[in-house]
Image (cartoon, rainbow, N blue to C red):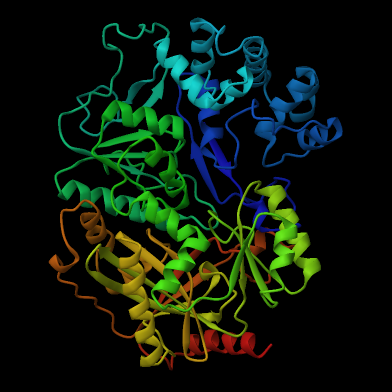
Length: 593
């Protein structure tokens, strides 16, 4: 089951109706033994804060809104069909409006009837056959827990107790002509399940070897803020781990990627990058640990659960990852190391945010924590704008800590990527943004190496990068964003993980930096073991690619929230190149406004 992934939230005011012109930015695929199981797996893979169809309290409840969305093909119609059935709208009416084949609609109806039946029970009274049926039809533990009014962990323990466990089936890449050396796997639930304590499952086609193993978590569907660059990192990480004699296991659900090519990793699990699926694979394979640094925010946001469940995170620890994201703790770290940073505050309500304006002068950059692509970031210039934006953010992302930074108006932005082994730091590249600070790094043209930063400022960037990487106990990659104003370098944020610029730097310098970083994460090498030899004559320019032609009526102005859908690389011999001057003139225009 293929489901596209859209990013309409990045284009406020855009026409969300689907038509002849493609608007999706990526896609996911779910594999199951039935349409219903594959459909649920695909919806769980989208990373849009839905756990599948229904059973999460997030469906549409308004009749007119449902009819409108059924009438006009919308990005979320795959969910709206379920909402319509739950509301009691007849299948014949849904078919009349959508022209979707009745077979598919009946499959939806069966899921709805099963949800109604499960909701009659609680965690103690539900029996094995009913719970097994729910799992076979793809319902997530979170969904079933929602129906039963219990915790996800309680439901997981219940099905474990009843012997309802995943088995893994092989997708035979040689169609049974001869034994496949590169098969891959998907999970399902068999009809005949043995109770706990019985014989091992004979129908599990994924055989566990006795080799030392490492799991690499993939980056999920492509979307703005998290594109193919993280798949590049995952693939090179897998290849590096293989060179270190690990059995490599890849988990991802994106059919567009190289990581889901069946001959990249020793074992590929084509599964949602969704906690329940990941935990079951970990229990089955028993790896040495899991790499989360390479899969962007998709993998990174699972680090907390991995840590809580006692599963080793290879490379930088969860404690350090969380420290970099917690603005209060991170600013204390900067202060202790005499590293400048913009004045800031943390708020959880609009009232707290407004109170902070007594200490922070406008303009203020507002951003939620643990998001990608600058989601929800905005520069506000007065209390009214601040209140409106904070209320809107907390509605969209409840219980989120909001970071408020004094915006350094007119500053230049730069960023550094480095590899650290906990003792030694090697800076793989420093890039200068052509657009000024305030434009998201993913939307900025940037040069490698820098073109207009003097040695005094450059040395500050190098010193800060070394200090921060070591203070965070980084093991692997780290990216740090800087703002430069009046010859002083301020730290905006640090991300102890692979960044979207690492592949760019690796290709510009013709160096396998992700390979080196992965070997450092695994403890196989120290930074000093590598013979770094970057090769670049002239400059490499990173140029973002936008898809505004797909959204003709939206605001095309750039800001702190990322809007580009890709990027290209331009090599120039000299800063006298006409194309470079056109880009540089753009920054001057921004700075004089």
